Image (cartoon, rainbow, N blue to C red; front, side, top):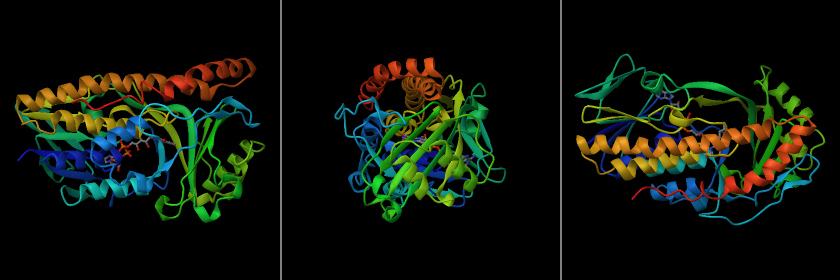
Length: 390
Ligand SMILES: Cc1cc2nc3c(=O)[nH]c(=O)nc-3n(C[C@H](O)[C@H](O)[C@H](O)COP(=O)(O)OP(=O)(O)OC[C@H]3O[C@@H](n4cnc5c(N)ncnc54)[C@H](O)[C@@H]3O)c2cc1C
């Protein structure tokens, strides 16, 4: 039987393990954490991410867990429109989903098809001509035809296979939170959207009734600069000060958030991207997938969407491939398709980084002009038009 080891049970690893096992692979999914656990936040799946999930057969429950996005538009802190909302666009409608619900759906798609081993932190990988790839944690070694590195931005496997690529700070800090439905202030119940100040950005999205059983509102705040060293309670106070005077419901949502709901983090990215996403070894090899392959700032909300595209592409190319020349060719084709795609999305994300970072009167004027021109293009084709290979 064809064997695959998937390293990392985040969104990328869960989707890939499900996709390969439904194609007849024997899959072992390794996670360093003691359990497979979703962060207490949410995200948006744009049309390309939704289409990728659909093609993975993992989307069955999407409509039960997702909440449609309010029509996109961007405001200034005083509430004036910088980019007016435009509804419609190519592909399936984008939606927001609580990560606990998305993890549950992907775990349900795995069923008992894959073997999940938690508390297994991969520390070593061996590859070479004529050698099936072997991963290990210092005590146990596992050999497989295919190893999928889905171990996130600090990927151990990528550090060995593509040392040219490093995780670096993007010059931003981000804070996320989900406020449960019963505590959402009236101003935040249906309103959602994106607001850009000078070096600051605030996005809020209603999650509807269902999110993780509690409904609620998800928000993410971004500020140019380094992550803050203070306690979550002090950071929340800082956020309330920075965003004071912004149009409703920004202040109301920050006031309703509890410090223990705050998820602060440094925004990081891979620079440069790995030159290749496939490393043939023996009759198969190793591929990089998800943030391990192309971690980027969250400004366009494309990280998980691209991870699902990766998984769908790998399934389309390697799902039926036999170990040997067919599998090696499939992995090389995966890299040829995915590396340029990620490069394009990263390039657009960097342009958006400059927009979010803009401060000062002249820079803000240039930002407003650029944004009006750029945003509708970014959010429609070519991102939305993505389809898995036949
Ligand atoms: C503020 C913010 C907002 C975002 N919003 C969006 C959005 O709206 N839309 C969108 O598409 N994307 C968004 N993203 C990006 C998205 O969250 C990520 O791209 C995605 O979650 C990456 O998933 P992953 O599985 O590749 O990595 P991870 O989630 O990092 O998972 C990696 C897994 O591997 C495990 N692991 C790590 N090392 C090892 C090891 N050595 N051995 C075994 N296991 C290991 C980890 O424990 C973890 O479970 C956002 C990101 C941020 C920060």
